[in-house]
Image (cartoon, rainbow, N blue to C red):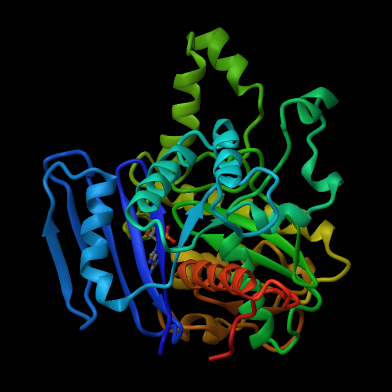
Length: 405
Ligand code: AMP
């Protein structure tokens, strides 16, 4: 019998879900949104591949999860895998026990927008499905292999020792999947030095040596690093005192500006959406063109900086909505990195179809690949791995591995 894992990603007013079967290609997925409001609804794809839209007025997380599960019950999921953004210093996926739930709660000050929403979802699924094993898979866990010289800030030591102020990194599930899958495609399974660029509405880069994260662009929070849809990425930290002293802004206003009004949106004064900006730039919008250029230049700078964590560079993987779909952004970014020997094949880059994996270098220099990410598949795999270890505690644990399709 084919087994399946229900993957759940709870936001403050939304729940993304995916039922991932052992044969990864059969997948049912959807999104419950506007939770807690009269417009609450579920949109998704059914088993038959048909579109689903269901109104669930005023439903909260628990009601939405109940509805989702009612529709999926006949698939008999064997476990639930929860995406959790911040796991503090937890290094791997964990069975949700009262102790692990407490660790997620303790990490809330480090992810105040995400962890409380995950806890609401966890609480609801624990009540609804007390007999199913429930596993937390953390965005931060993959980066726990970073050495201290990569994860420490040059700040007073007590902020680290007493208040956990350090770099954690995020998007770990995606960087882990893409680097593993990509290095398989490249024929160097988990060996060597690879850079990953996860470019979506949130974006980050990662340096991976022999399958382990050695540095990444995001830090204490997902604000650090490269330019994102609405997040600034790196800025001079004195921006806070500058804006407070000169414009009288308080810390909340500055935080909101840096997280929600900056990045591509702030630079272009038009949109956080890369497709919109590319179209606008084509039509002569100079702000949109500048936003694209800053995005690519800073991304290249980040990749160059992270390469310091690698003894050598075997290649680079692009992923995420922008990385997978935009030949232009890949070309512009690599144009800033000629001294690393990257040699893009424009033909292969432009010919790559949306959503497909493929190699896009010209055959010399480090390899360049596009690898569509699969965070749900990776969460399902890690969930299965934890469940298998619970069922067979004496079996030697090994890393979850990604099949070559
Ligand atoms: P994600 O957060 O991974 O879903 O990625 C969302 C981002 O991908 C948005 O900025 C989209 O505009 C961008 N994106 C999707 N398709 C394309 C495309 N064909 N060209 C450029 N950007 C794209």
